[in-house]
Image: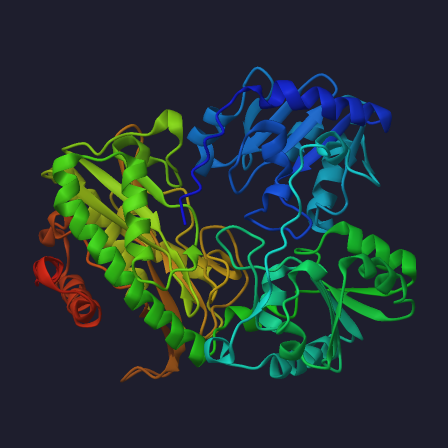
Length: 603
């Protein structure tokens, strides 16, 4: 397994591909075309065959969008990809614009009056499409669905084949519940919504519901496909026959009918008179259009697998604990390497990332990374989701900081952890800012909260120590994480943005406040934690949820200023380090274990 650092910094992508797309647009009478990053499954990470935005523009980030008009074009990316998008996209061919501030809707509001802008209904959720349609109408333009995507026609001769990785059972010893039991629960949830069936299009829902995993999507063990689940728990699962292994039919059982994806349109057309539940946030507009044309009654609602998947069962939680201990040992070996070998050799960011991957591979249990490793030295660490791409790679620098964020996919769990390390002797300013971030991290680790509390309501706790000193960070504090599934999983999250989903027992979230000094260095501390059942607090009146820490790896004590910590905060750091040594230490020996004992010594 190798890092998928993208070397695509060839500015000729737009010059070569835009004219071909415009020619196909003209054949369909279109003045413009929307090119979302998302594919037919609304995936964050894409198989090469579905990465339309990358083929069009060269931009390979996991979030973005494109708009092609007859005389101009634009690529949109968020703050995570500021450096990457400018390294990969030719500014002579594309305007490079912010995905969040204004984004595609604002661009469409300035479209030529009377313009007809095409969109592929398989690539846009109805909710997202409604926003884009309103924006186009403000300009006097119209959106028109296309039967065949002009970009796909232009790409045809060069387009990679669709992925066909084998779909394999995910054993109950990892899943914690049989697929039959899950299907019974989901069928009942469908009935409770007043529906006869649900259409599932999210690969993560298929993986969870049928206890299967695949390899169609990089960094996430997902099988691409669709399913129809009936209220009685029976189901039809649509998978490319090339992906169906010999063991799969027996694993799924008689209540699950395997069919090829080509059969899905006919199945939807046959749902006349039935009430069908489908998620407008996760499924594309094509499904809604098809069901309505067939005469089905569409019941809009959350994918019924979403919340059960997010609230992990005891087996999944224990598996995740074990995955993190194993991963913590690999990470500790890496941190020892950074603190010894790398302090002398000052490797490049890519060499740093490859070293971390090598230590994870040496566990013998790594199935994949959970995302491309973020390794930012000095100024690059101030870009929260920077990845080493050719034009921007730096070496470690004495007197600066190294920020490394990475994770692994293991059969029993998914990990994601960030550590910030001093290179050479840290400055007082670096220690101050690291400690302020640490104070916010501790606040989120120890908080207790009543049932019904959302991540949005907790977010300020992690920011308060920095707010009181006049600082802040511009990303969320925490995202949901799957169980040998996506490293980004909803609906739970901890962020300034309003999120109405209460935190439930068993939900796994990251805790990752940070601070970024543009042009100098960045700091982030990230661990994963799981929501614990509500329990009474001595002397209190209401039971309270809390968080159990899952990630164990030492913090860089050189960056901690104990004078800025309260006694309780110092006690937390000492207890966390003691637990790290107790859990990770038995997997280590020799000089690495000796180093860990020093790294975990009381403040």
